[in-house]
Image 1 (cartoon, chains in turn purple, yellow):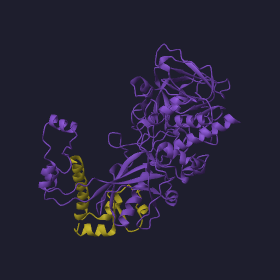
Image 2 (tube, one colour):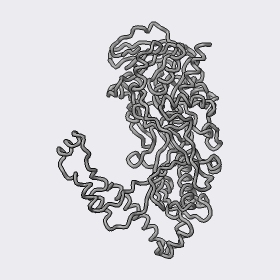
Image 3 (tube, each protein chain N blue to C red):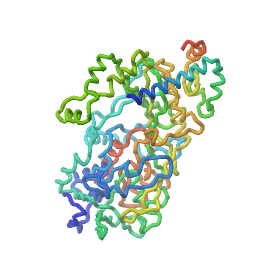
Image 4 (cartoon, one colour):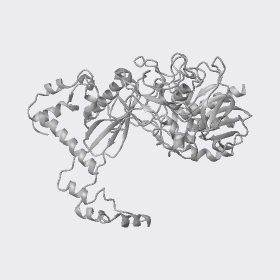
Length: 509
Length: 70
């Protein structure tokens, strides 16, 4: 069934649900669907509606006080389907080495292993519509190379969870999907070990709100928002919920994305290639995992004047004419590629060297000072807004430099080309580019409620249950203990499936 | 594309600038010493390779540059 908190249609809340899932993004929808299969009754609470709206997006507004980062209200989406509404579809499971502690990265490693997530590959593939193979194979090198693997991503179309699952959820007699329901309070018992209810409000200023009761609660609102809510719901406990060890919000990381070098290739190439370090190379250099992408620059074909004139024949007309042709379904000449301009630029000149760049996306070292905190401003519901204090460390710079140097050595040794590290990376200290100069990050918000065996080292346990609580769980990439280099959606989907199974087991016990 | 072509031009200008520095006879050793060696130890790139002005070059590259053959 589907309800809208704006319509104040709040019948049915006398019921105690089995599970209240807060957040209608990939993690929340996935966990809810698994639980519904077992016959459980689920309240799936989404803060936004079916489309992006200014008022529903507003609570995501926050402040960046650390490294230059994206505005917090544009790097995530607060409506049904969540950030799956703008993700790009890159899929790859974490590597076995990502789960293993590394002595040079304190607190790293997970309390689970890759084997705990592998059983969920097939279903994660199905949910994300990725090709029906459990893992894209690594590719061989043409020559011996101990430093790198060539690897592949797999691709989701990308799956938009709202489009894919709205009808199913609406038709479900097990799931009550609520839209425009904003979490504003989470009353707990005196000891702070058990959630007693979750209180929601619509956007109407005079809405007194309503409380959903359930046996278990799952907070699945995203890598920044999970931490923000746990901190901001401080009505009973000044430190917030699940924050006795002062770990909520700490260890925020993204996968930093930077162009780290320019490459002159021996021969033109149109193929993007992906490299990651071998375990041997990773440990030998005390670096963290990375994905390095060789990205050949577009290399225009040589343009003769006749071809250029033909290709450019459609150019130079006014906008109205071109619009009419487009509306009528006719192909328009591409005035930027291969036209007279390109001929003029390249006439009589020797062909330039084929060029490429290398772009890195890497795992950040764990840093407790890189964190989500609360700002002083409050949102429309009276909750303090997020403040992101993102940092990089010397280990992060070391990882980027080592990756660039090793790849440069590889292509020089094999005479594939020559590489130049970007000046900002060789500067001392490194001059990390801001968002005006590079991609900076993948908008992958991870680590803020990290999974740990010891409650002193994180926020949730190996089952994603908040340490010290009986019935509060967290879903999404905020639970990543150590992020690896791969995009997070695939792993968080596996984790949500596993969480659904865990709660199904508890409900049937 | 125009933007890319300009970037390419800038990039090649920078490349040729680095090579021209060699052609003018500046000893390679001096350039190597100018690198921030603490973080970018040349030993990381192995024998027979050199870190020069951010470039990773072979010994043959250096010889060719020095002999004005590039």
